[in-house]
Amino acid sequence: MHKLLNKKAPQFTLGCPDDVPVRLSSFKGEYVVLYFYPRDNTPGCTIEAQDFTRLKKKFQENNAVIIGISTDSCSCHQKFMSDQKLNILLLSDDKKEAHKKYGTWGKKSFMGKEHMGTLRTTFLIDPEGYIVNVWENVKVKDHAKDVLAFLDKIVEEQ
Image (tube, rainbow, N blue to C red; front, side, top):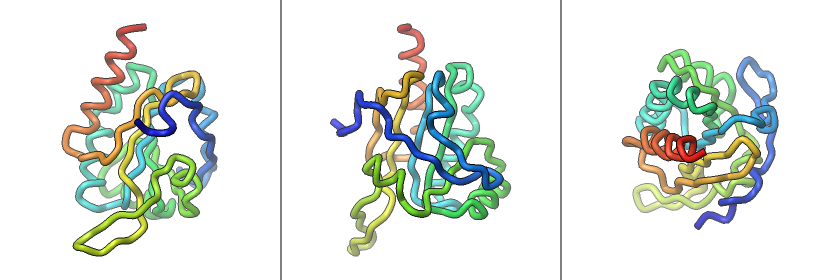
């Protein structure tokens, strides 16, 4: 079980879009799908962003906003959004502040070498600001659908 599950979501203010700071607190009253991903314009991250974009209307029907966070710059995000026709909110955490608060910056291994990087993780935050589910070690195939199914179930039960 993730250490933040059922706890208040750590607050952050990050840059983008259009270089305007975005505060997590400004989404109070809505569900927030907060997903951390390694890099813009890489195969897995592109699939994940495209899947969330494709399902955005269904998330909105459940009063949910989708926010992707990586360490890429705002200009990199803008290019990624333009190239891939994305319409979700992507924020830049180049100082890794939100990554550290959410425990999504850590050791990874690639081709036998260890390095520090983003641990692909998704958090579902409820309208009161509590983390109601965490998906760790995310595999991108069908991930957005799985998050939507979980959200559908919560909303139905209310």
